[in-house]
Length: 587
Image 1 (tube, rainbow, N blue to C red):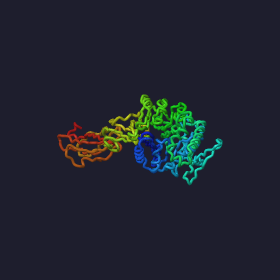
Image 2 (image 1 turned 90 degrees about the horizontal axis):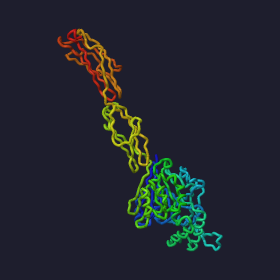
Image 3 (image 1 turned 120 degrees about the vertical axis):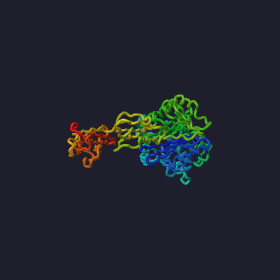
Image 4 (image 1 turned 180 degrees about the vertical axis):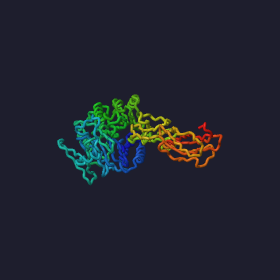
């Protein structure tokens, strides 16, 4: 059975809270991409309450943190109070001082987001992987985790210690009794994997060696300048959080773009596995606050996701539709024929009017979800529709499964996804015909009706077949006697031999029987000797009649009636006569 995906974007205002649920057989895989907001707290709490209805299990199988801005993570502690979080994906640049992220991760641990059994995972593009490859291979997530667990990155949380000798890099270890435990980070060797038959593809813009070196140095300088003693000190001093971002992740360190805090954003694409071969738009691409304005970054991003851009159903506009993160190429490559989404807060300045106008003017759909909206939910359904066929009359009104009157055929389809279902049928192996309403079968024939439904994402059910046998026409029946009169009328019993010709063009003959022999005169019972109402097997019959009459002025006329019935139950009767003349001349 294929996987069904249900996805929902919550109206948190200025921030993002996106959730998905993959359902296959009796298994679920629940994931979240960011949960935070800078709008009023009540909006975020209301959305988290709504999420608890959407995910009625005890687990979040995958939590993805695009980046560590407040409006993307400040709802995670509330989420963690209701669920076991099995794994967290966070954005990490290889060779960057891991302590930059240890602070953020420690905060998440202290708030209960990282729990005792939570796997902390980073992804990286494997060496030698060609991002332009149209059909990348997607290993199983559990396989990647098992491989990564053999050589985990042990993150020992440390506080750098200022040193007069710049050539030395000293530090103070944090004691475990101070609750600052070590993390084991699983670094997956592939940024692409699958769960069930659903694909995930992650992306970080790769920073240069110079940029990473500058960030690492700024981090050490910041810790020294602000005399940060330990994690507890860092966490409790809210006033240094903004300077931390502005100094460490600054333009002087990052040449390619302005705000690294946004642009470390971990992008995520997800789609059914068949997206690699089908033409339907069934993929979703979330971009966090990544800036794609710089053509260098956009080129790298496009190399990663070009294989999927024509398959996008939903595209999340970077950084809530900010002009500073927008690139006009998005309009033609990623927004085209997809639904573009921006989650924004009222009066926050996002999205930029120019960005939204460009999407509209390019005749593409866009929706801005503010805290005043309802949640936006969509389903990517891999389950094919189920089409049912009904007839009028509801069941055969003849024998042996045959209809004896016109048959009206109706088709109806049900589908677990959104959108309509296109239903079609064909008769006797002919071309497929769109179903536009009930159709009538009115010719004698055995009809083989194939029918199927296709939903709006091209899930097509294997065709069903209904055989309808229709025979409205009675059989043809001819009776031939070897004699039509009995003479002389000497009261003898005379044998009459019958040749029967019975045919039926459609359902074939079921039976022929001699159903009655009558006389226009009163007669004795033994004047007629015949096997009545007994099927005749070889279309030859015989009976005996008495050559006798009562009247000297009128003939005795025997009327012999045969009945032919076809397999549909249509009946034909045929009568012939044998006379006993009252005079020889009428013999």
